[in-house]
Length: 112
Image (tube, rainbow, N blue to C red; front, side, top):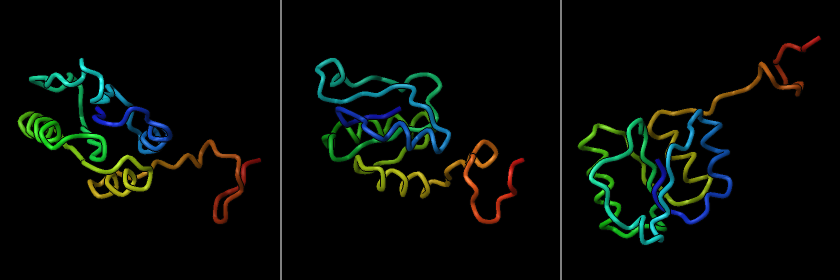
């Protein structure tokens, strides 16, 4: 689940590279999104808070929800670099696609 940011830009591509799909995105600006839920959606494994688009009280509320439901969360700026650094910091790594890749990288066996 993503909280913050009006538009996501390249964020979905970065998350896909880590094997993460977006279950729900709450921008925080829409008045319907400003109501604080009493729990996170079912199936949420990771909560990502974009700090440059959220107020302190909203961040605190979502962090408390994640902690009470034993869900990992990260808080970072809405930038590809900050997101990658935070994902790596919690032990996630980018998935490589060498099996399907057509590029001839050094050290990679060549496909016939």
